[in-house]
Structure formats: structure tokens, C-alpha cells
Image (cartoon, rainbow, N blue to C red):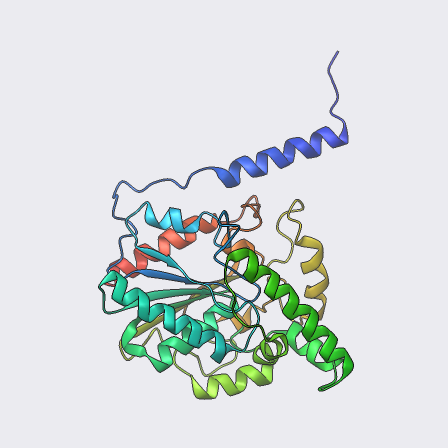
Length: 315
């Protein structure tokens, strides 16, 4: 008699398959220097991000190791979880200055996820001699509709704004504490920085790498710095991903395809590698626990391929 699978058993089996696939090692290149870039790779996290929680759980889940295995020198930075781009950018700049001294190099390649991509742009604008390349991943260069939605529904200077800001800042404080840092938080400053108006002002001050058309492609090289971007355009990628319900809600405020938090056109910057990967906003950094789209790209492979791209450019 053929046994039948109950629904719970089937779900558990599917989950095991997804986890096994996500945990599988990235195929190593025959060239053990595949990701051996000339300059170190600096990873800059997004809003609400961190380097590691409790010294164990990585924001860039498995990505630093995947890059290091091919020869890359990788540094993971941490800035205020919630703050304006200029405030976060200054914190990132301090770490970049320390990295170039520690590593004994002249420049670095910065890869920024989400708000971290804007921080990277800031560093490249104020200290271009330190930055060989900027790569943004799921970054809202033209603004994030969710930030505008929050701004439109929370009156400036109101009690609601104070409550929202205080709650978000406490959450940021908790994340910072768990990550072992004590950076100051500014939730309202972060929201304002990510609105369309906030990004319009930012882009006027720091235009390098930005295209003329809202959904166009920017220059790959400005001065001695190269600019790249990639992003996903799916809010739903894996039913076992606990962020799926959240992105299902946030996606409702977007008029274009999005990764749940950043619209496809808004993510386009510099040389656009792709803007339509089967990735949601956290899939782009291999979260949560590597539970990404079964038929989508392996995020670790995307970072390895890009490191090799930088290597081929002499960066």
C-alpha cells in the first residue's frame, strides 16, 4: 500500500529542500583567485542593518566567506541603523579611512545594500580618491514609496511622528546593542532621507553615477570611480521566508514592480547589471537564512561574479 504524505509532512519536506539548496556551497572556480580584487571589498548594510548579531548571525549571510574563498579581502562595516544618509555616510567614511590604513591600500570597492548604497555614494562623493568603485544593491536612488507613504501619513512635528520616531529609534538601539555598537539613531531623519524629495536633494548634491532619466542607466565611470547596480523585482520569492507577509503589505504602496521596499526604476544606477532578479529586498543579501527563490539566482554567486568583474577591471 502506497503511503500518503500529510500536509505538515509535505511542508516540512519542502522546507528541508529549500534550506539544503540555500546552504549548499557556491561552486568554486577552477581559479582560486576568482574574487581576488586589487582593492578590498567593503560591505555597507542598509537601514536597520548590522554586521553580526550576537557575533554570530550575519547581515550578509554567507557572502563574506563566499568572497574570501576566492581571494577577496573583505571588510564588513556598521553604521547607525536609522539615520540620515549624511550621518551614516560620515560613519562609513571613518571606517573606510581606517580600512585603507589597516590594509595598506589606497582605495576600496564599496558594495552597499539598500540605504547602504546611498552611504557609499556619499563616501565616493566627498572622498573619491579612496573609492575605486561603488556598487549599489536594491538601493532607492529616486526614493522609496514606503518612505513617502509614512511621511504623508505622519504630520511633521506631530505626536504620531514623535511616537513613530521613538519606537523606531529604540528598535535601532536594540539592534545596535546586540551587534555590539552604540551608534545614535534618528528614525525620522532616515525616513526623510529615503523619500523622493529627500533623494532629489541628495542627488543634486551628489550626482555621480546617476542617469538623467528616472528609469535610465547612469555612467559607469566618473573620474576614477566606477559605478554599478543590481536589484530584484519580486516581493514574493519563498513562502517559508518570514518577511514575505511584510513585503506583501509594503508592496501595496508601489506603482511599479518592486522587491517589496525598492521600486525597480529607483534602483537603477551607474552600469545596471540587472534590475529584475527573482529576489526580494532581503534575498539580495541572502536572507533570511538563505531562503531565496527556488528558481532564482544564488545571491552568493552574484557577489562572487561581481567581484570577478571588478577584478577584470583592475579594481
